[in-house]
Image (cartoon, rainbow, N blue to C red; front, side, top):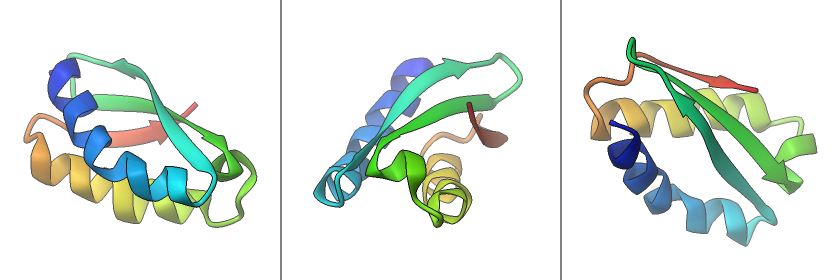
Length: 73
């Protein structure tokens, strides 16, 4: 599942990089919890929580059915 999540993240990564940020995959648990670390401009952005939940989590759940939740670490 980790490879599927990484492939899905690669689809959204260009948008994050364009804004001076990025996302790093930290871990994917067997129960569908994806741990991500926002880096660059995304790390300190006040909208990072919304980006994580409304954009990244929604996209990952669509692309990888096993994903249940995305959390920031």
